[in-house]
Image (tube, rainbow, N blue to C red; front, top):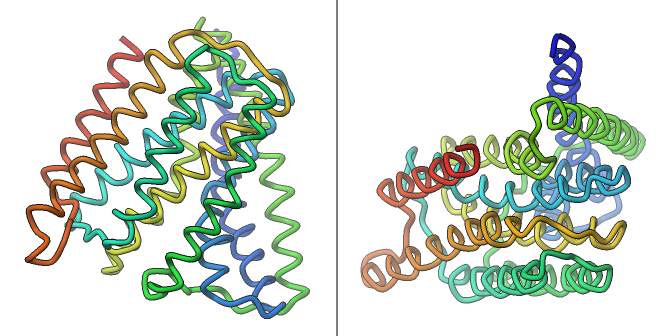
Length: 320
């Protein structure tokens, strides 16, 4: 136990590296795409929107390659829990978050369907290669639907894309990607050693330490957007990130190294994530029915408090 500072330091350095490099990777990717004439709308809906999930993707791939697929699954499920319970809950405490009608008609139903499909795949406590490929194959289809939807609402997409020369953007893209990979390796290694030292499963570490850490970019982006008055994009960003986590982050360990999991992955962790997603959806639809003649649906402070309480309750159950 006296040497625990080493894996703890690896986790800390990994987190810092992930957050810094993800920002540089996304900035470099977006600027590079802009130099090739790709529209701000498409960049915002692809590179920028899903770029905040880059830490989860790299950590998931790294964990799967190291035989820690359960840590990768925990990262995906835990990140979705954190996005709804922590990110949206905390952001709603700053200001009520308006919900655009197209989110209720297109993006949110898609998230519910994808969540149900993911639950079906996890219900037997396994994730096969075929199931992983099915999830990943759905990603471009879902992205296409979201892009089609957002073309009619371009004002909801952040267009703060950095201006760089092509050489500079390529350099930041490469530097960000390399440090992302190195940081994820440090994080997975340190988290695995901590799990071993404390006698807990890598799954629990993935659901707690890794999931919360890799969700920090989403938390920062949503809170900053709310403080700037860009309330419309917070819920859309979380829905997009959660879709990406289920269709890519969770799919990767199934594709790379199909694994058998603890029954608790479905019975406890997926059900908690699915339940929180359902609570969010029901609350937004009820809000829409109650407010459709006075501004439409919104995620207010009471629901924000509820999401935070449910999120904390899940972790009390998990660690109790």
